[in-house]
Image (spheres, rainbow, N blue to C red):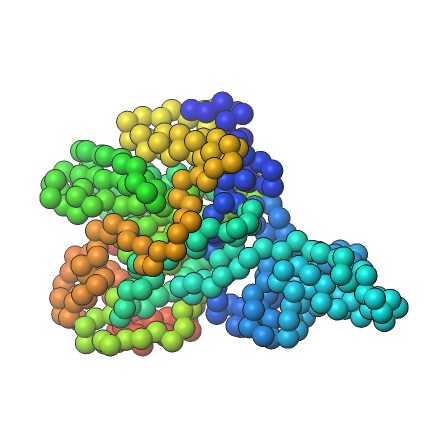
Length: 425
Ligand code: FES
Ligand SMILES: [Fe+2]
């Protein structure tokens, strides 16, 4: 349970707020590289700031104040130039550093171009990595953009999926350190959704939570698993401060504003050995629906859609003054404690947890599935495997995989990808 004041401190993300300042010390995935190749301008709202993301004709990315520095027209309707973006209203052009490149009439009226030299618009750094575009909105110099080892795994089909979630970021991230929800929200609920009326999944009998360099790790044992099981010996990673690494895919929860979050899933699916070597030319990114268009109810058929139902069900901003934490919530308490320490660190002028200052390639993260992702399986074994067979013929994480992605996915795997009505766990 938190006081209203402490709940506010952890959930507010705008500029100048304690948590907003912590989150601004980290890089966040905000769009797909392929998305900007399809359409070079995208408006985004991040941590309460309205911005425009673009790729100019010279191939450079920029992230600027959405409203033009002249008289605040919407640069989302601008056009990209060889360098930077130009406002549709009076043609002022800005580069990725937020400098005026050309102010057509003003430059003619004043050949010394004093206004052009002076004008500045808000600008943030953007970098491409692993099919995604990442933004840094904090004080300079920017820290290193983490380069995780799975970004270098080979022979896999990668796709990134966005979803717009109408709730605060923190309740979505608390799900990253919540082992017992697997049993209920995914296993038991999926069984009921598939029509089963009785019987429950094996229940959890032991949990452990640990701190490590890149976040927290949780470990779990159920009635059917032992101390030798990788979910206990290796565990899963609550990636700092707003990510989740489940051994086979990443999820990030990027704050849009206090009441909205951009969910970003990066999924690697190993191709069967018969389809190797497989080299992916381009990583597709797409946006998943979260509401059923006919009934208006939340979609419950896929793993992360189920998570989303829990997140939005907690309200726009979960009221932590009215919760009752138990033994399964030790990780939640650790996460909040660390976030308060991060706030103190930033206020004292130090880096919070998880900020990297030295370049490091292919950062290792614990994965209970590493063997499979590094070595793969022949098709027949893949089909027989109790866990991986699910990935072979379905995209289980998000509903609504578009046809063009499904086709690329199927071509990579060498098998047909089928739509999934309900998760089979
Ligand atoms: S408002 Fe953008 S150029 Fe005038
Ligand atoms: Fe989940």
